[in-house]
Amino acid sequence: MYNLEIEKVIKEIKERKAKQVLLQFPDGLKNKSNEAVDIIERKTDAKVIIWFGSCFGACDLPLGLDVMGIDLVIQWGHNRFNKEIW
Image 1 (cartoon, rainbow, N blue to C red):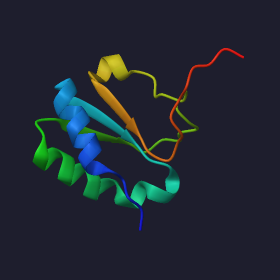
Image 2: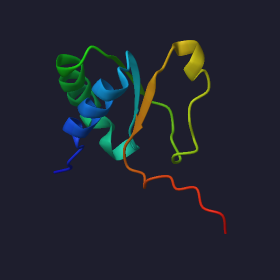
Image 3: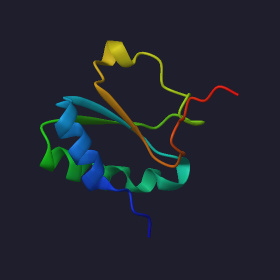
């Protein structure tokens, strides 16, 4: 069983007062997406959109986030993106 840390997501949405949230899942977790949306929308004021396109990591954001009015993107299945100068 995977722990999607939904309570952390809910806390972040509330802290940022996000109204439109985009969720990205790797292929192996997409079957959990509807369950995540139901819980998040029930516990926040946000409208949640699932991105069913491919996702190759934290730098692979969908085009048009501003047009869609997305306030927050949540990605599962990737390590935290750290900027470091080598």
